[in-house]
Image 1 (cartoon, helix red, strand yellow):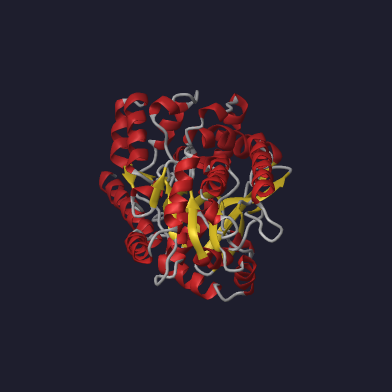
Image 2 (cartoon, one colour):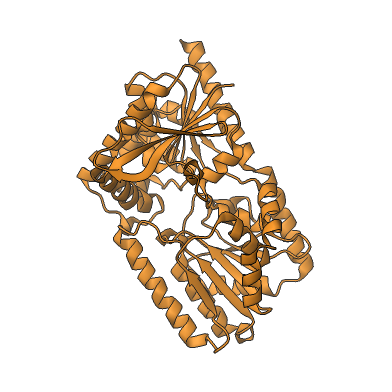
Length: 456
């Protein structure tokens, strides 16, 4: 079996013996089998970007990490990746801030990733590059003479050409993607958007290759493993403390990184609307929003936190009683195990991003439920997961009143309907697992290896 070489912006926290909260790292670790080399940023900033990686082995996975200089961190990560690409790919054109200097730094840092990796690649390897931080990486690997198959997977949405064109180097980035042997997207809409860009921005030879290489492969989770975690976590001290604090009230839960793409202000407004229009729920429900802070050196994220702080104070000031706090809002993270237990006891899971590549929290909420008395998932139509999780209550995240009515529908839904909806959702999640996603992508990438050998 070929060695799989993963490249992502960050490596799993457990490579450094820390807790791992979720996301890409968890998906891949649950799915990958066999020998793996995984390269990424260490999370540390140093005087200069590492030319050679540091290695650590955990089981069959060897983690290789590099430090970034302050300049590379500023231009590559905080700058072009998160001030240009992130808002653009989430259709937030008014938040896009483009700097030629940051773009130059983004490309230069991608080259440094490639230079750190190249000496450790062997014939027979397959390289799998992940996400928007590393779009040019494949080009730099090819530039160094690397001939093994190289695939790319985009975990966030890909915008239509009318949005993508806003970015001055749109054509160059499209050409970077066309270098890869397989280009994976979460949804058919994302793939179609990329193909539209390829047809209009690339010359014929690159366009033909890009069209053939682009595939739709939605990410999944290990549903059974998460279900087992949730079942055992319900008896932990933290789950018992939460249960006791509810005093019999029904729990509504949201768990999102503190990011403007997650629709949190609209969600808070929806909860306020619910308490205003359905007074019967006052003192009968409690909403817990877990929103770990991120990218605090980006002004839009600091502004978002201030907005949510204000809305929390407004809601609790208006509706709280001396023995009831309607909205519990916390900006530090919880372990995946703790969240699993909290999900299991929640009557409503609120997942309402304004735009999201997939959203694994939606799947984890479903997997965590007690099949004898499951909760209800309220899901944004603009999350990639909505394409398959259509038995959820699908909402427009820009409509707080509609979200409020969906929460009411979920709280008043008969048990038999809740069970039927949950069963349909769980079947889809089990079918579209992390392992299946990983296997399908690597099958395509290995097939490209055979094509390369036949052509040589």
